[in-house]
Image (cartoon, rainbow, N blue to C red; front, side, top):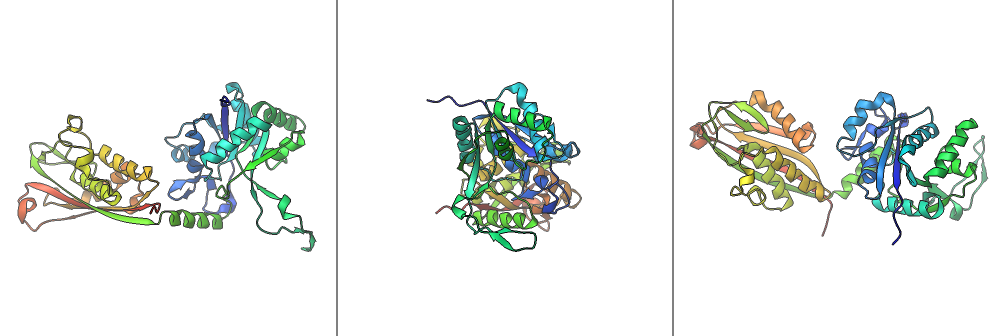
Length: 393
């Protein structure tokens, strides 16, 4: 069995990307609810053959970067240069002390790279020393002069669209970048072109049509539509929970500690709002209920914070490639008054679930002094969740 080469990845994210619109660098815009750069980095951060991921960023973007990629593993970012070529060179120098054998150089504006492409890149670099992923050209290409007249029609069978990650033996691409810098050459638009100039033979390997670069507002619109279409299984679930009052001086409701004259009688923290939400999400997944996943008979859940239950339910959606579109909770009680706490509860649910606060609703009503809630013996909650999953027959 061939030993896997020691492989690192460089993620080039120092550009401004102004053609994409949106008022900021395109790599920090969201697509499908996630930052572009997070989608671009994650496959490398999670890949078992990639030991180090080296981002190249603009020093003005530190806060944007840290927020966008929270939770991923990577090397401390290196500062980019005035050109893409200079930025890649900075990344190679930052990695030199780690002595990788193979380096993959990827654009942060390509958020849909697959693990299969990464594996092909590593194999190609190990075999040839320099290789780029390519996709066939499906349209006829014309060479046009300055007056707009067609000068030639290249043979389409010989044309390919170059993508990233471009893959190289680390020592040879670092040497090529150092030579280009020493000779004042800073006009290469990709690393394959620089490698060709340095005398390397650059091979190709199979790319992926989905591994496109986001450049214009139209690119974002098209990919948002594609992602939405891929989550065509729209499901709704409902949940209900109730807890009686007991001794105590506060209540946990929708993740917020609410001062009160009573507490909840419950095995966990008794958060009726979050419990109802968990049941709604699990119901939408057709995946049992909160009691089947967190049995009250299990002592490990005694006094547990319900944040963990909601995080778990959200993780079940993510594990199936899905996305939560909306969460809604209705609290039924006489007291405490929910209105002044509504925004804090929406914010907390958003923080726990990762669902934008604009997609989280918290409502309240009374039972007109009827029943156990009317007698202030406890609180009830109903919830609804809308999720989108990939369609699987």
